[in-house]
Length: 397
Image (cartoon, rainbow, N blue to C red; front, side, top):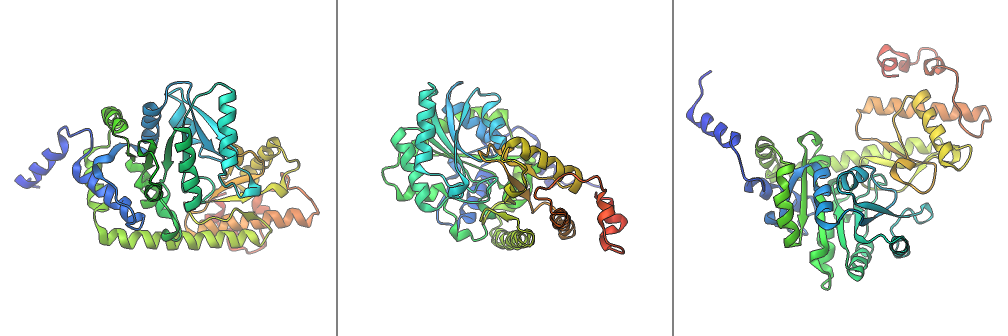
């Protein structure tokens, strides 16, 4: 194979040291993508983008920039357990839960925010910011315009920072319904923009987490300056930047991919909900994310987190399905579980749903109010000549 001069020049451009702030064409492409995912209702400035190794790096960088060890961020519950790692492990920053309840569909309320803030103050913990995930992991919900305005008014009143994680923005079933924090602050002329920061990554919306690209976007010039100086500790390879810049700047491709992705997620979401509903299992109403927040409280022997863990072990051992118990998301109420529905093919998804439905019906037919661990093997429960008894299916048990 002969190497052309053009090929050699291209290799040189991607192999040598580059600007740690990120390639200009990459930051421009990311800003373009963020605009289009949010319906072009907002415009992001490429010069306010700091890149990092995944959203983990973006969160940690912001934590270092905004708070000292021992100071805290308020975080509405339930929340992604990765926040414990991202914001706390190396920074010494604390997370103070804002308890959101199922009776309010886990919505963030002004009362809950005030209570958490006062509790931190009572414990002599200085609150430096509020972290929200919009859309939420694990809830699959997103904040409406009025709630976002209430959040902005709260942080303005307290003079604390707002960090908004929008990594699932492109998974909202109807993109017109989603309101970015960048859109909400345009309607709040009294908002102190120096307090507003955003974390994003195209990895969830585009389905390529292994590229490890995170985005920190800030309206605060001092924070941007410090974050850029720190970015050398979490670089994204030039090769990855070149590849993604080409992909994310292709408007024709993006404008076709995101709507199709939303359609397929909505179809899988609705199918999962419908199938679970056939055996009386409900979930929180949601229109975003790659998961459902499923209500399994009826199956707990007692309304305790110990009982939740017992039931979780039944799901793992007998159904051989992977779900996440609510307590791992700091949920204040036992019996809620996160179920991911978008990481398997249709056949595997149907098998998982079939196992759940068979398991529930079998236990209820025994007049057993609460599900328990059976001594029977799963394959022993299969009806004769069932296609689910094939070697392919049983190999997945």
